[in-house]
Image (cartoon, rainbow, N blue to C red):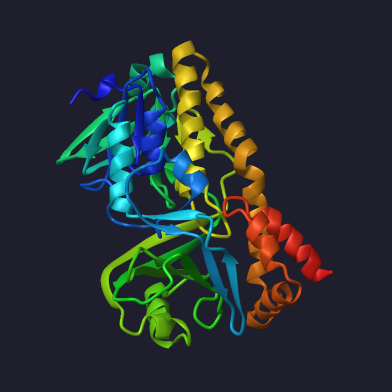
Length: 395
């Protein structure tokens, strides 16, 4: 394989990596994926807003349409949404991811079961002057890649490297771009034989069963659901406890049979910078995730398009390396304020025990705010409605 022909190498074949590659339109792109197939293993609940679906390019894989949510605290229940408007879609991620990858394959090549490791050219300067001179023509390009595939190792020097390798991004860590952000572990079971209102998702805030985040039941159509949670530890054990012992969920899921188990990682908080020399991070690797819901597909797709556009302009016009920093400015201008607001609200919500969460839902019910939330709420920009609610609730 002629690795030297590639101008851009993307580490990670998920939606963010593929969409970035798809939007680098006039240059040679290689997408490296560590797994043997795109879309596996499953690491997501697959619930995507209407805006998110459009941003992802209307991919295949929809299995259900969602009109709202039931939100449960210890002693109260809210029903947000109505029976008239579709607000989100549930996807079979294996189908969706593969469809996005097929689109990207029109513009990029794929290499499966391969691993990319970042190499710092400055280390060569310190350790081996002769080796450094070999790369003197590319002295502005600090990072090279070591690619491991089928027992062989190749060293290449692409003009741009994109790290789209997920929440724990080894590429980002190698460049010193990781930060002390909150990392939660997720566990999820797909279950069948469930009698549920499949037009609505079920969200549970109960510190007894999940102290760090929330628990979800997402219908995938008739009698099929995904049940999951995120927490700082023991997520699978806590998930089973919820399924078996939660007073409402245990009744909903009493006849449920598990057919698939999946785990994942949720990063909360984003990096001060997502560009360093010829390296750019996108998606979960960059922390482009909603802090309150954990959703990363909509933000990741938006930012991947910006990333691809900036790279296209950089390569086409032979700009200096500093031009790539425009990506950092543009994506933060687009969604940075919403992420910051989400982090502030997450800090506030984490301090609320079950009694305070109960009081909040009770306040919403007593003050007839459900209709207001239904009309004004936006799952992609929740800070707007939350700012309004907490202002009323705390005053």
